[in-house]
Every structure is written in C-alpha cells, then in structure tokens.
Length: 532
Image 1 (cartoon, rainbow, N blue to C red):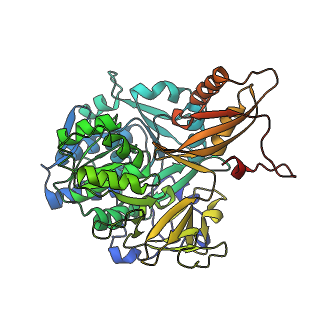
Image 2 (tube, rainbow, N blue to C red):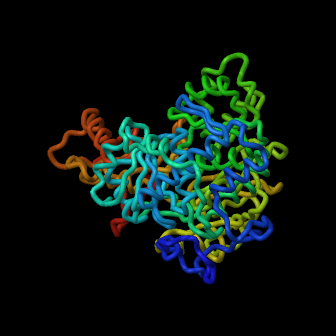
Image 3 (cartoon, rainbow, N blue to C red):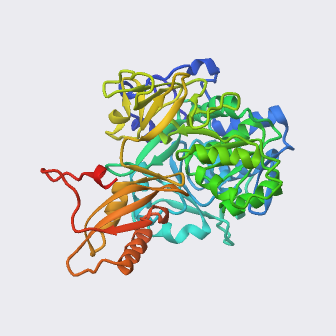
C-alpha cells in the first residue's frame, strides 16, 4: 500500500511485505475506472451486483445445489460471522483447500468480506508443497474441504486454526453457518488493501506469492471480461480451471458475479463431463485449455453445443489446427488469450470482432504491450523478443528478490517470447525460461528434478517439456541411474509414482528416458537446450 493510505487491516503483514514502491511496475489508467478509495471486493461482487440486477437471479450452482444472489449473500454473511467468531482479523491470511464447488466460492467471498487475505491452493498439492505456501504467506487460518484434510493435517509448519466444511461434524463450517447470524457488516477495506495471495511456480528458488488488491479483483472484470467477453446477466459460466488458478478464479467467480450472471462450479470438469454439463446447465461462457477443446471434439454430438456463445482458451498455446477444428465443428471461434498470475488474468486476447487464426491477439483495453530485446528496446515487426506489459495492475511479489527480474523499467516482463505482425497482432513463440505448460498447468522443471533427486535410484536428472499432440507439452525426464539400479520400465514406473507422491500428481514425468550422462558445458552447467 502506498504511504499515507489508511488500511482496513489490523494485521499489516501483507502491506509490510509489498515490494518497495520503486520496484513496482508502472500502473496506467487506474483513475479512469473511478473506484472509491474504500472498497471491499466481496461487497462489490454481491451487494453492488444485487443493487443492479436483483437478489432473485441465479448466482452459483454445483455439487447438487443452486443459489440466488440473495441466498449467496446470506451464506457469505453467515460464513463471515463464523470466521470472526473463530478469531479471523482483517489482514490475517486464510488458506483455502478444496475442489471447485459452491462452498469454496462462499469461503473465498467470506474471507474477503471480513478483510482477510485469501490464499487459495490447488487441492492436489501435497503436504511438502503446502508447507512452502504456509511458510511464505505465514498462514494463520485454513478452510478445508473435509475430504482433503489428511494431506493438510500432515503440514507440520501450520499452527493455526483449521475449519473443515462438507462433513458431518458440529464444528463444520456449513453447520456453524446454519446457526450464525445472517447480518454482517463488511470490513471497511481500502481499495489498495491486499485481498489475495496467488502462488505461482518459480523456475528457480521455489514458489512465489503474487499480491493483489481489492481493486485488482474488479479491474480484471472491468478490463478483460467487460471488453472481450461482454457478458450479460443471462450468461452461465463454467469451465475446468481450478479457482486456485487466477484464470479459473476470474472466469468462474469474479466475471460472472461482476456481471450479474451465474456460474456452475464443477468438482470434476474433464472433457466428457463438460460435454454433459454444457447442455444440462445451458452454459454460455466456457473456460478451459486447448487440450480440453481438442479432447471434446472427438465426442461432440452432431448437434454441437448450441448454448455456447463464448469459448475462452488460455493456459497454453492454442494451435491453429485446434482453433480451426473447433470452429468447423461448432461454428464458434475460440477466444485465445495470455495472462499471468503476476498480472492476475488475461492482458492480451483475441476479440470476437478481430480474430486472426494462429495469433494470440492484441492488448486488452487498459493494457499496453510490446516485444523487446534484453535492453527493453522494441524489436522490429516479425522479430521474436520478450513480452513486456503495462496496465492498471501488475506484479508485486511478497518479499521476494525476484521482483527485480519480473519488473524492469516499469514493465512486467512475463517470460514469454512473442512476435508482433504488421497488423499489430501478437503471436506466441515459446517460454523464455524452464516453465513447462502442459494441459494448461504451469510446471517448473527444477521442481520435478528436485522431486526425482529424492529417490535413491536417481544420480542425476534433467527435465524438459516435450511436444505432445494432446497436451501441447508433457514433462519428460532424462535420468542417470544411480549405481546398482537397472534402467527400464519398472524403474520408470517407480520414479513416476514417487514423484506423484512427493509433489502434485499432475507434475509427474509422463516420459522418462534413461541416459548415461547429461549434456553439460566445460564448467559443468546443464545444457537443457540440447535435450530439447
């Protein structure tokens, strides 16, 4: 928070750990949105939306339930009172753990309402990964789906209060909400109070926590969603990305609630499930990765998916062949886009009225972007370079020296290589770091390498992203076996199972190649490019 601002937080940990103002990216156009100085994002997404569209419109469905905006506000107010009774104070960090479902959304909104800082985590994370999140964010409270308690209770570094939900205990959040008062006065937060700590994989040095304000939550809806998706109150949103991913948080919670629309939160959103749920709920706005769109094509019925009007693709490169095949089958053009956890959501996107197959698109209104060299000088048209972005929000890492790597000269340097064509459209080329984007998941190669090295059979290893027709890239590991271990399918399976048990299962190497040595320079530095 900038000096002189009156925070609504009692616990000032988040503000105290923002990077120095001199290390922030340049923020442009913030004043043009006219947000008030005092702003609580939960209130804006509920009370303000109800004032515009009414309390009786459908809001959130899933897991066998369906609630109107009035019912959601009632539940969020009750949950907020439970949190206060549990000791949550404004500025406290509250971790959320569970799959996409209505009660996860209620919990997220309730934490914001009481002025807490939400730390939403992937339900697949293992205890060791959660330990890092707890340590970095100094988490004090946790709201956990009762089915995901076992791994959470194995986190030795957490010494706070855990509130379970969805079970049959009298201490369960849902049971406590039934007895709680529906009257709650939201915390008087400042627009620049930190509302969200979103974690992103680091290619070096472990995960990083990105910090986002209450104002930022509205900004992504009032820039990308308003200008690209143009949702109405009659739209129904759904998709596959977890709410713990900011792509999913925006698309499945923030955007629909900001527009007075409804959202269907699916605990399982595999391609076969999506094909069933889209017609069942009349889904109009779908968020998923290119991998899922390709998979759905194989089982698409002859009538297509007539309810859909917006199909949003992000999380990995969208091949032109997938774009063309989806349009041929459905008549709909996939809306490609690129975003970053550091920027909270999508900042370059295709537009319905400006669609160039194979191109990611142009900057979302409110953002500017350019392709630059190592000195931040723009490169000529058609020349690959680093993507640099500015907008009304940008990267702020929590107490992390890598702030100076991502933010340079006021620009957010995303780690992506792009080309700009003669018409100003941006075309994705590759990542510039060791991040593997597989089926929409960001997987840091060094993290997988570290997991493999914990197994006694691994003497050395190097991990890369290998091209794959279905997933874009898969994680591939080159392994030098330790003495006494026989390379082969049995050992490969053992190593894969080991990685699944050590870190989130989706990060495991789908391909393992045993080698006698890894390519290195004369000074011993790994030459990962030779493996690629």
